[in-house]
Amino acid sequence: MLLDKLIKENKAIWDKYIHHEFVQKLQNGTLEKEVFLFYLKQDYIFLNHYAKCYALLALNANNAKEIQFAIKNQNYTLESELELHRSILKLGVDVDSLSYKDESLTNIAYTRYLLSVGQSGDYLDMLCALSACAIGYAYIGEAIYNDLDETVLKNHPYREWILTYSGKEFQDEIRSFKDFFNAYTNSVSEKKFKKLSEIFYTTVRLEVAFWQHSLEQKMQI
Image 1 (cartoon, rainbow, N blue to C red):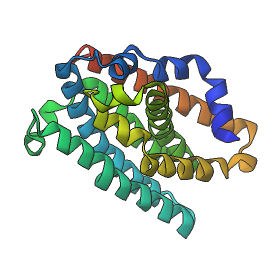
Image 2 (image 1 turned 180 degrees about the vertical axis):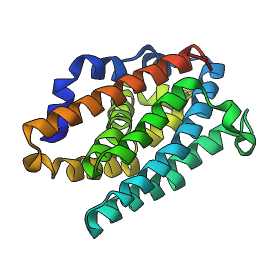
Image 3 (image 1 turned 90 degrees about the vertical axis):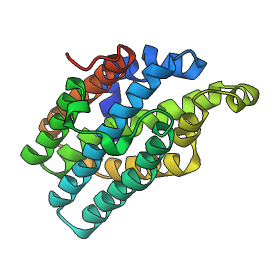
């Protein structure tokens, strides 16, 4: 399958992403609240751009099925993931007051790269660029949930985040994403795979940078 092949081709950077220190600290509950809030604020800004990327994906579509997939995922991002962030951020951040001045340079680098892929590439290029975030979070959420004892999870400081990304709704959504993406497997030439692998590597690399800059609460690069 196409996604498995992309992950295998980029295993070293993929492992840095899904096993990052930020993820480990989130899992064991030692992640400082200030760090988590910094991450959530940046991720809230990121998801607004991510939703725009699905609109761009729809513009690159070749048929109704591809348009439907893009719009469905845009709606999920806006209605589910962004609402999770809004509910948690109410504890310490007024999301309605966020502006371009609150966006970190790492966030700018990642989101503008995604948009550039959609503007210069085709539908599959953009789909590939969007996959690292979606697939990675599903893997991380499920892995954390499976590793935690029920009693520990009940009192976990980041329980809501864990239950969202390990939950049936998100996992079903990403399973559908993987199936849709993998349906292109047989149509991808060796040359096309090389391009997709470059895109995938770059987006996973940016995911690693996103964890790291959140850990350091770093607005600059």
